Length: 493
Ligand code: SIN
Image (tube, rainbow, N blue to C red; front, side, top):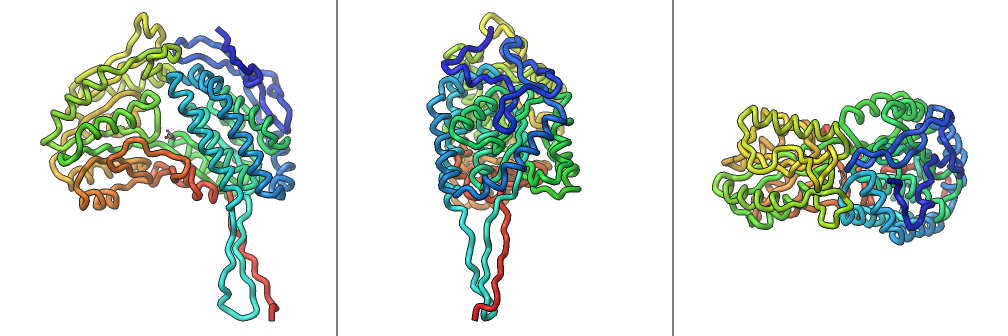
């Protein structure tokens, strides 16, 4: 069934290059499927290297005028974009739910979450000040000026089709950069709708360009951007292997990089914690978006004394989650994005059970009258999980909560840090001295203390180690799109 929106112009079904909506150079298209049913309901261009190159040509040509546009004027355009996103929350929420599968309430929540970054960076645009440096020698004036880096390429994932592109494009435009972007092949429609609204907000032609491409052609498009010295920065959210590939391939043109890569977040519950609050925090952080987030807990460590009570409380809450398509108003967990995602979840659970883990609840695919499609997996709690199991080493990216028992703080800190990843880490404790010991000891870009919902437009989001580098959101997020030029004037006296 095709998707009908209140504002059908949000479904352009085309690339946007140099202010024009256009097909791919060879007119090939990419089908977009509903993960709830695998039914194809829309098509977008399957772009070529020629499309990618044309996007850079126009973005490069548009850069000089956009960087010279006063920050206040850029801010007004970005603020109008925010207002349009907010006023289209219903349509955009439905679009996200249809192509990504998350329940409608979460889809609409994501629209507002995306808008919060756009509004934040509209305001930050006017505050990208430089510094006057106290000169160490007489007769000189020394300045540090902030300048936009130039054309940036944004490559975004499918799990938050609105928020991830918004928090890349908004700071880029605020800084005075021009943009070429490619959304994930599973969820191109929301990004096209956001670009349509940016056009209506008054973003000038060539400043923001988007091309869509299939999995097969994604490399063809991205390679053009990697090789082109006019593209001065790549910002990417996705897997660590792809992030490392981008870093290697962009070395020849020494691009600036922001890489928000995979996670393997620990979630630690100490026996002095408020157990109900810890369960609440885990439900929010683990099951948001069906567990398909980079920051969701992937390894749950619970101290001996509270282990069984915690698992009982958790299993009761997980068993009450409603799994259903986004169209069902009661839905709390939707379908996974595609068959590959469900296969991986199933593989992780089977591997854990074969190595001695026990399924407390869930542990299987769901296909029934309420969930008629192929991509549903039951919210699951596993216990007796150990570090050798696949679910402890790789991101499961699904609604599976694997629990491991621990005895001492030293053991759990060592276990939590024994991963190449370092995006988010969470712990629950009421011991004030332990709180600051742990906050220091955890090797992670983001730490949640007695809190499961961490992301916010005003906070720096990003990882360490194999989870990447660069920050999104906050004032640090704007710096990623600027460089500093040192200007020194002599002969002042
Ligand atoms: C992500 O999963 O990459 C982003 C999650 C968030 O913004 O909270």
